[in-house]
Image (cartoon, rainbow, N blue to C red; front, side):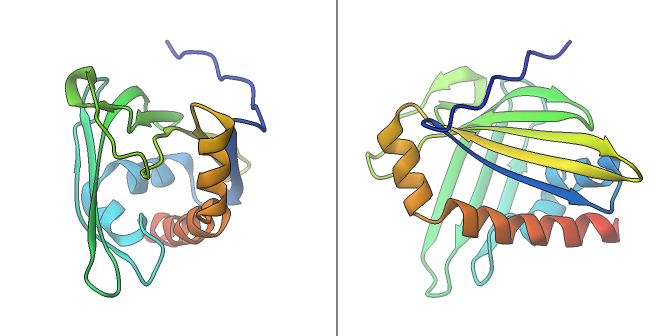
Length: 163
């Protein structure tokens, strides 16, 4: 059973939608398989050098990103919901096992709702980043949400088409 999709709140949420010529099963595989995620998750020239996923509610969702100058950032989160080939929900607000996460103030804390909807022979892909307040949403947008998530989504779609 899936939880209801929350209504979009433009003051708190950022969303990216695309239609891709790949079946939901392929886009899902690209999103939930660590070796595939490492190929697309971080917009170039950044790279995802490590990924761990325990694909179940309470499981870990961890990525390590490396910048062009060698700087590394580890993002640790918790998976909240798994509906194969339809929805994946995870958050940075929690660690695995639903343990509360301590975050530095400059790191945006989001809950990501990733939806995969059949669309003809392809997939309507909808990625929504939920924020705690308007200031956090605005900061994430100003950090380049549309550009960064857009580039990563282009990379995701290219990977999905090869599976």
